[in-house]
Amino acid sequence: MGCKAAGAARIIAIDINKDKFAKAKELGATECINPQDFKKPIQQVLTEMTGHGVDYSFEVIGTADTLIAALASCNMNTGVCVLVGQIPAGTTVPIDPLLLLSGRTIKGTPIGGWRMGDAIPKLVTSYLQKKFNSDLLITHTLPFAKINEGFELLRAGKSSLRRKVPSLRGEVIRCRAAIAWAVGKPLSVEEIEVAPPKAREVRVKVIKCKAAVAWETGKPLSIEEVEVAPPKAHEVRIKVVATALCHTDAYTLSGADPEGRFPVILGHEGAGIVESVGEGVTKVKPGDTVIPLYIPQCGECKFCKNPKTNLCQKIRVTQGKGLMPDGTSRFTCKGKQIYHFMGTSTFSEYTVVADISVAKIDAAAPLDKVCLLGCGISTGYGAAVNTAKRAALEACHKGWGVSVIVGVAAAGQEISTRPFQLVTGRTWKGTAFGGWKSVDSVPKLVTDYMSKKIKVDEFVTHTLPFDRINEAFDLMHGGKR
Image (cartoon, rainbow, N blue to C red; front, side):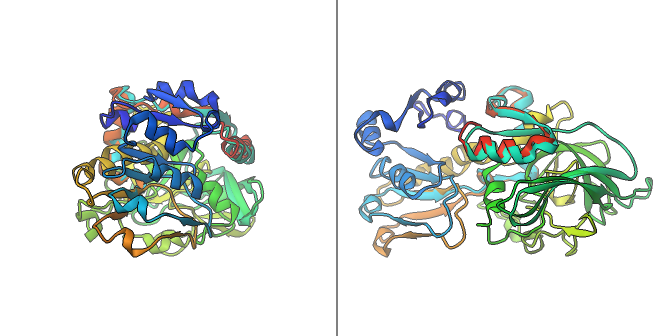
């Protein structure tokens, strides 16, 4: 879909699961091939199909072999390989220097290069305008209590989970949240209390609700009752209406994430309604439709002011520790503190985020669709239209190519290479969230969706209730989501 939006005339989709081909074509693929149908390496097949190799390749599987194949399939002089997939920790990728010597490049694209605060509302609007359709990416819809089933679906490659929760209102809210109590253990859906922010007009209290809690690594999520405290100054408490499942959630749950803290409430692709706000919050108010952002946009730091990056560092330290900007958590369950995840924690009926980590979007946008703009679609789409497109001119010159890495590599991961690969001027770079400036771009992406400029609906493969969240993980790991 992103390649189509970027103007690609020929888009070749590659997957060993032929069941995905019909959907791939709906999303813009002009051709679909299965590597298992050929005796030759897939890079050789692609080179023969195109005559010279592809201009851009996007590696989304996250293995050393597929990364090498993706790079080798590029045009030897100007091809750009964009890494999207997350490669397991400790993996070494032995790249032949000759692959880069003539001008090929590798680069990354965090969250598609979007500035999340700016881009998410725009993406939602674009979805509503039918500029793109992410519905095709939703594979299952599960009840909150089945969040661990979602992980099973994810691991089985069968899921792009979305979770719906009922619309509730109240000063003190009890809801469920999926809490990761320990590394490697399943999420535990607990009842928590989500307290409204301290505001001048509204008296807010702790909310008790359901959440999918990850008590430890490698275990299914547990649906628990959790307590969600009121938002403090410059914080926003959100009623999560829908959330999707991402491989990054599974990555952290597996215990491979060096920043993984347990118990925790995972989830970072969500959408909802502002329930209450803390002091000093001016950009959103109770009742606003929003998408929480795992990459904030303060608009003041040197990173936000630089057009070359979208990686705001305002709250990076505390977010990486699973805490709010003041160094504390808003979640508790059974008397224990529960960590936040990527500043969003959308596997809970209520969550609290920093006010620089939320984007107001078109109220008419279907939240069970546009929640995907919180990460997955924005990242892939932005990798093509932002990061890769920006490097197109440089890539036209031999030895000036730029390689973009899209996927999140695991801790300790290295790419085995030699300095000679870069001696002629090649560049490796990354692009988080597709290069979008989050707060600015997300509303525009929503607008593009509403205008039918981008597709979102096609990315929804399943819709599951919250209680079946672990099934969603199974679908995802099974490659069927």
